[in-house]
Image (cartoon, rainbow, N blue to C red):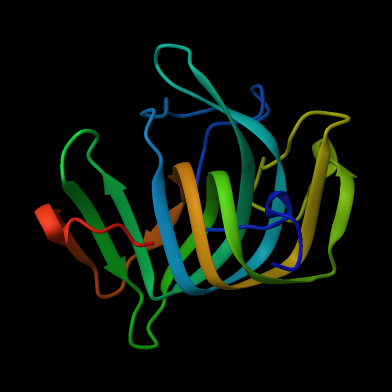
Amino acid sequence: MLLPASAVAGAIVLGMANGAIAASFAVSGQTFKVSASELQGEGFVQYGGIAQEVDGTQHPVAVTGIRSAKLFDLCQSVKTPGAPVVLTIRAGGGGRPATASDLLIDVESLEGDATFTNINIGQDASTLEGGPDNARGERGAFGQQADRVNIRNLRQVARSTQAGTFTLTGLKLKVNVGSAAKECF
């Protein structure tokens, strides 16, 4: 990884920094995994936030916003607690990427090889302008933004994802049970 995980984007989520963005849903309490051979994004912002469950449980996250994204060889998986069951979604293969606009992701961890174009690191989170509309953190909080982000070999654990539009080309959804219940990574 070229920068610390807090400096890297990924696919995909909401749950906002102390009300800096109005949360439109409470998170489930489960995380999910997202992998992609490559993410290409335009208009990247990132800052610290909180994802909150219905019962009030809070989870610190890196709120990652990308104005427009292409995801190649996308895999998303979620494991059923206490059971050998994993739901997987695959899309964006064969050179036909999945695409998203106004993407917000509540990221817990992220790995990959990242390249940022025209990045500002340490910018006041309330002044971020490059990402989706209203993707800003609290005044005085650490933030960063870049014109473009490219992440190869993306491996992300997230709490939630929100997008204006999410197009899953070649969508394949499958419930895997028993020995076939493997997550994306």
